[in-house]
Length: 534
Image (cartoon, rainbow, N blue to C red):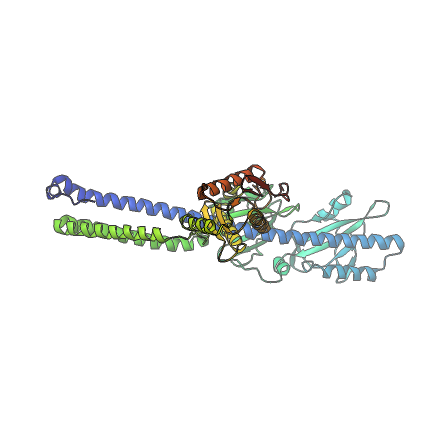
């Protein structure tokens, strides 16, 4: 950067430039800062989306498992009553005892009872059946009475006048030997504290995060918000425009008016069906809570930006006042920039480590490989070079995201490095998802055994990869070449042969090792067919 002539500094154009240029710089700085803050905000929202998905999936699995357990318990009670009916008269005390044992297996159940065909309760795990009201008028009783093929029926939330508690009734039909209706087995689930009993501890949510379990009519079954269960909303429609549950899991965006209607809190929502039950789960992560850290980072970023703008404007003002100060500052900046460039060049020359994987990088390989080649030639020992490539890695990045791709590369690099001999073997990241391995003293057979073991180790990591055509998990393909260096053959020839072997492995279907020893091609005799899966 040359020093500007004094005559140019004194022109009107130069004077205008001293005013306009700092303003343009400030504008660009603000634009870049705004873009960076918006990208960071989106990143925080995406993380909140993942948190909602994780919480919703976990809760849905637990709730579905709970109702599966209840269904099995009801079926066991029906089987017991039908069995006893087929061999003898029913003994009330014996049936009650059996119902109590079955109820004790499911902490969520308030009690377990059975009715006759008229709806009168004859057997109950706890309490006196005589004081319990008839169930003949209940919707679930009528449904089971009319449809002999019905499985477990789940009622909408009901308020039990006797216990003064909200319940949801699960029921199954009892069929007589001739197929006629013989009553139902009923298992009320107390909704207050239901999930706490399911998990064995109190469920805690952060800030304005919430989740609600609804039936397919939109009636609230369980809702947690503000760190506790909301009992005031029981059996009320959560939101009219969300009454039709999604067919499959979905995630909706921020500022959903239906989700915010209850407490006017903007959230990121995740919807999850509860198996094949007539229920769905809604998890809401507060946008405000999700952006707390971003807001702090944003404030800090803007403070730094404004400070830098102030520095630019003040510097421009001072430079415009004094040509000498301008030239001095220009020279000082140029000097500092030159030193910085020199420092960067020195760091680039000595930097030999890949920042992501911690392995040696391509530059280090270019330094080590010629030494190993010369050493092998002097000692007349074989040298093997292998090129290793992660199969379908671009597809993995597109499917799971670059962060997941980075994590996978780190795990693969660590596994490859652990599988090599310390002090002799050498591995480096060659670029992207490709690695290069030096195996001094290894002939083709030995190189093949090492690389096959590494291939198996990588597959054993069981990192899911539903986009791979080679396997359901992440796999690698490896190509190598091994021979004793001799005059007339160069290191580049060995690398080229290893690269050709890698391409051969890719053409053969990936997830395999292919090697060259001189002119002889070695294929993996134990290569397996591709495995497709999810």
